[in-house]
Image (spheres, rainbow, N blue to C red):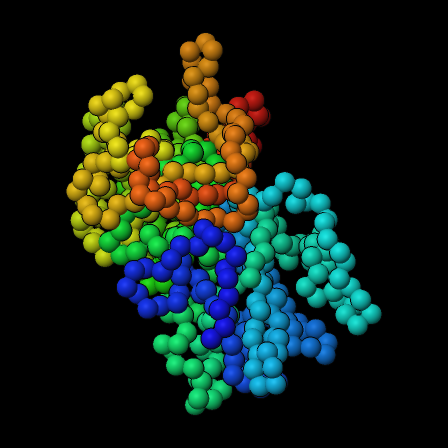
Length: 471
């Protein structure tokens, strides 16, 4: 079969001893049909129609573009839209392939790039194709001209080739095309619980190496960004759709556990939101980013995934008012309890980036034992990742000149490594106690959830500092 470079040295090798060609939840080779294009294309059209997509075709060619379809419909923070451009290309007289490009737009600003509101690109409309099917400029013009309920309201956008869907289509169509179709063992091991009904975004490079049954992945974050909760939500979706049960741990006070579980199992009604948001945690006088609208987005995304039949769960593990070593010990105990009760689940545990470290000591306390070190002492497969990001902003609480805690939107300094999420491992654990990094692109501040009123939170909403009361 044709090999295809995936375009990035950050792509990790497949799991040792595994014969699959499916790497990091994404194939590393193209799907080639051993049939002519005119035989394959009608079945491609049928596939997308059967999966509920409305599409239009370019005249005179094997090319279609689906209409926008909303996922997590109705959520003010978790909703996003996606559509596909599908092009069939001949690979000789009796062979062909599909190239599928996915475009995603999100109500969350997590992937919005600087200057994205401007129109960069070339207008693709021609005499032969007056609609400009697939043109970036035509797409944006259409969005600007749409009004009412049909408007695409996404704040961020991202386009990428979707080889995962290419293989889903191939494995659906190939058996019906010929008795001599490739055996499944000759294609990447694409195992999904749904077909094209759940969209999880561009595969996160490197994630599939770590997010495996029984593994605990400790994610050391920068509080108060939109990108980290989006990264975790997308990760949970990609893990769960590949048949791996996943549990997300949040640095939220443990007394909120029952509220989280109740909301996750709910229909997301106004009453359900009010019960979740009435907790004092969401109304702290010094919100430090852990109770941001981005975290609400993450919780809502997990609820929606659960509602679509995926095996996702959530737990809170912070233990206020404990501090220092006592707090680290209590948090580690909770993580160990959850892992012990769910040995076949993948755990994604999010915290400030001091807690996941797997080395003893801090510059101001050489005897300090972080949560990550305590968990790794008890479990074999514990991976600690530090956050990496491009410069931007975050909602941060820091001590001001008057020795009072100052919380607000503040600039952050990082390094530009592109706009695609990825995980990269080091050659072993580094001096800070991390096995690698997870990269989330340019960061943007996520305000406290009750400041923005992202979802119903009872009969009253808090207001942001300096703003007028909500009416």
